[in-house]
Each structure stands twice: as structure tokens, then as C-alpha cells.
Image (cartoon, rainbow, N blue to C red):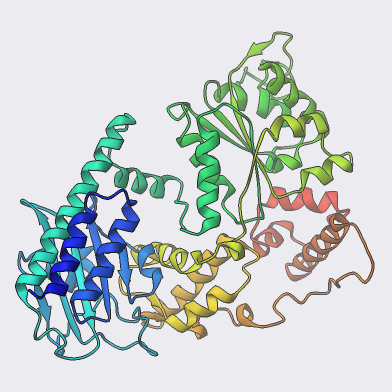
Length: 510
């Protein structure tokens, strides 16, 4: 081996004992690959307990790769690599599909990678990962010294083993039942995952970690579709109450006349239809957490009763004169500006201050620098698994255009747009999602034009928003023959929520 190669390998070996984060150590090794081997792209995978290869670092590829998981059975080249203890090279005329076709940043169009090599990473007899290197030039790997790549593989496996042991120790210290990767997969399957490595998301994670271990009330604010419920689950999962229930309450969907009973319970005979006593949401959450979603929609009379529970931990079932004590941690969420609601008299100032002990603002997607490509890869993985389309990907130029859009509906809008585009591509038998697969209006300059005009003079924001909401509902009703259920489907929202919103805005049913 040359002196330059020796130096790179020495630096990687010294890096094993550094204080770098796991992500930095993974990337440090991948950067070393480019210094030693003549390649245009490389990727490091770890092998998780569910049998998936999970990319943890890459160079020369679209960052959307880091949002994916690769099941070897669906990727013949990766499958061949993990079943060999020696480096595997794929000839230029190899007909096996390459998992990175369309993901190379150095190509203008989706063309096949020409020279490919991969090596399985073993610690003793355990497979821990895979390292791949790709080049556009045919024959780029003809002069590679196999000893060098085997040495690289040994150092990489040692790094993965070192990191795995550190993760296991941390998991043991936290008295968790499984290592970090398993917990990530559990969170993904149960509640979804907070995906993204932007500064804004790191600050959000820091805020969650700061407040999670306390019993302080948390008020989560942010636009629709930003992931406020995911933040709630993260706070509860990191708290000392994580083994206790977390009860979800949609304050906007509480049925009229039964809202108090839903929250605080009732006794038999308290009202017509109360044939037996019933515990409310707060009793069910005793010892754990209650999540009050859309808390800004609570009626004032319920706000007063809620305040009593927060202040004294005391509630009364409807129809009972007995007081019950509960120990509940409260997390509330809203897309409203509660300070303005307080000023307008629609929200109690004392309740606002009780809820706003530790505020967490969830950033809109358009402010999360660099997160859209990773989110795209993550969101498309659901479609790949559901429709058995492991090679489905977004064209690099289209991914760049996706990044430039404002996404006023945030992650939820991005997911719906990607899903629709993916389904169009799959139906047409294509693996590459192109611009033509998306809704045409998505990329139009005037996509947000409506009959709602921007005000020429100063007007309250709430009145402007309500005017736009009223026009949308009236438009939906006109399109669906005045049927509220169909209008709700048209606007992709709950029928009860739509009916209450329409009633509040003065829209009367036909």
C-alpha cells in the first residue's frame, strides 16, 4: 500500500477512539473511501435487527438515500454482497438492477452505474454492514488492490462494532430493553419518526430533551402538518411517565353536549343516555400524560374546568359531588396564536399561562434547511414497501424542484404529493418519479390563487382566515351538491369538524 493510503487508514483507525458522534464517524470513513479508491460515489450501510440494510453515510449520492431502508431480497446486488465474505465486483454489462440508479449526483439523467463493487462487513461471524463503491467509468476498479479494500472493510467493521457496543452500553444504562436501532424502528411503526438533520430539527430535539424529564406543562405550536403529534409522543417517550398511558384528546372533535363527560367522566343517570358511570380522559391518563390536541378550540366553560384540574389535580364527574384527584402531565398543541385568542376573549389568560410553562415551536418545513431530500426518501419508503417497488426513486432534478417549493401544508402535504406521484409512476410501470407524475398545479407560479384577495388595508388576520375558510367550505358544498359528508371528503377533513367550523362561520345547512 502507498504512503497516502497508509495515512488515510491510520487516520480512520485513530478515529475509532475519537469523541465524534456516530454520524460524524460514519461520514469520516466514507470521506476516506474517496481518498483511496477511484470512485464517484460510496455508501455505508448498517445491518439492523429486522434484516434491513440502513444507509448511515454517503458521498456522491442524493441525500434522499439516507431516508431509505434496503431489504436485500429486493436488491440482488446487495444480496450478492452480503452472501460473500470477499469483495464482489459487478461487470459493466451486469443485468442486475443497481440500488443507486438515478441517485448519483454526477449524472444529468437517470443512467446505470457502470463499475460497481461491494464488500460485506463481518465481526467474527456476525454481519454488521455493507460498504459499496460506484464509478461511472468502465474499468475504474481494474487496478484496485484487494488487500486495500479488505483492510478498509476490516477497519469499517471494527468501527461499526465499536459504535454498536457504545450504543448497547447506553441502552443498558437507560434500562431500555433493546438497542437504539430497535427503538427507532419501533417508533417508526407506532408513531412515525422525526426525520431530518437540520439545525431547526436539532433545536427541536434539544427542546424535547430539556423538558421531557420534568412534569411541566408543554404547549406545542406550529402550522398544520408540521408534526406536533410526533413531538408529543417524543416528549412522553423520554419522560419518566413513558411506562404509563398517554391519552389523546382532539379538542375540536369533542361532541357538543358531551365534551365535559368525555374529559371528566360521568355517573349513572347524569343525563339522558348515561346508563352507567364512565371514567373520563383525565382519569384514564392518571399517572401518565394527556395530549390536548387543538386546545384552542375548547369552549370557555370547559377551559375553566380544565384550569381546576391543572391547578389542583382535582376533577368532578358530571352528575357527581365527589372530587377525584389525578396526577396527569399535560401536553397541549394548537395551530392558533393563543396570545391573539386571549386578547380577543376567546381563551382564558390564566389557562394560557398554565399551559405555556414550556413552549415548543415546531418549525415549518420551508424553514428546515436540507431536510426535504431526506424526508422524501423516508416517505417514499412507505410506498416502496406497500407496493413492492424497491427501486422507486425521484429524479434528481425533480428532487431539486421539490426542495424549492414552499410546502404550506408542510410534511403532510409533501407526503400526500409524493404518494400520488409515486402511484402514478408505479401504475405506468416506471421506477423514476418525474415531474409529469405530480399534480400539475404543484409547480405553477400561481398555485395559491383563489377568490380570496389580499387586503389593501390593515385587517385582523383572524377575519381574513375565516373569510377564506368560509369560501372554501362554500366551494366544497357547491361541488358536492350541498352534502356535508361529501364536502368533508372533498376537503379531506373530519365531517364533524367541518360541520362545526361551518356553523361557527355562519354557513347554514340546506
